Length: 218
Image (cartoon, rainbow, N blue to C red; front, side):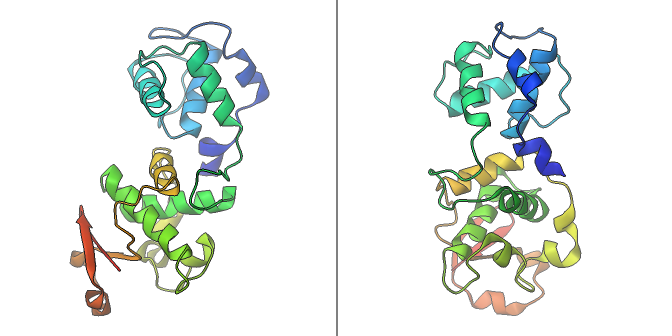
């Protein structure tokens, strides 16, 4: 399952090799591979871990440092590695999230965002995740992520099978941003691409905003 790549706990053997030295551009070894696996689990590294600290790893470390208010230098030293380790074993349910989610629900969110918005900007991906969350919190819709996503005819990607494509690890950042409260839709519970509309009922919904190819509505 793709979820194993993104949110599973790295094996103890790999995790324990981290922190014995500072890692930086040009470093090689099991600890670099463990670092890459941890970065992938949080959505910062979307290629196969290689054990070589190249430009992709350096950029991933910098993005992680930015998001956690660490010194931004691209070096995986004690502070950065410690922050990664401390956050890596957290349960998917998080007090900072708008909803507490299980591992299964996180995977469903990742799949719906990837299948519905993989061609959209990061903001557009967060927006799609936000619509799902907004529906869960709205008493007009099912009160679970699974219920919302699999509500009949709710999402085109579920109906046509694209939902079952394996999502890219980068989707995790968009889902987490939505769970932590960023809602670029302004509270929308519907969205649509006007070029692909099959039910004209959607045009009766008041539009809140447009992000990329999607219109978001109340």
